[in-house]
Length: 193
Image (cartoon, rainbow, N blue to C red):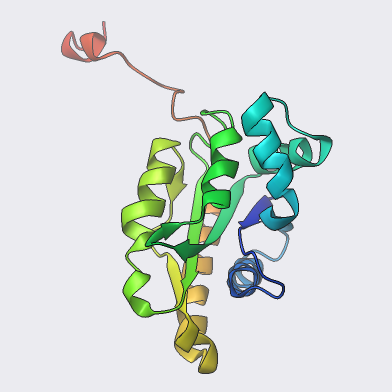
């Protein structure tokens, strides 16, 4: 069975960030109905994340969240935009993960914000973060501005496309470590000998 972890960093209740995360998860489950989806609300773990950053030891709740993300076949990650980038809570959660925890893991990224002008956060903040962690973001990412919720037709179309791409990626190739199959440069120069 395919497992998908959904990490959402919305702070309010209800949160447009959580709404987008749910919309993306629904799109994926429509394309991959047998998938098991587990949602992690970072708002509920904010104090645990901070304590882990200070002490280096996760609480049981944070350990469970980390294990869920690490063991999942794929990840949906959604953050609100604050000061033209992802939220501090979102970044702090990924900071407490082992650097190799997301190697080769497919990721569907999303973000929410007040205006469309913050949509570049997807390509200029989130993609570099997940590239550094050696995850594999799918081509289509979804940004939802406040105006998208008033008339969600276009948002639904984008979410559906992203969900299908992500589901296709999950069903076509097993998650493997980027480091597996590594060939040193020197060996490549000598023809693999």
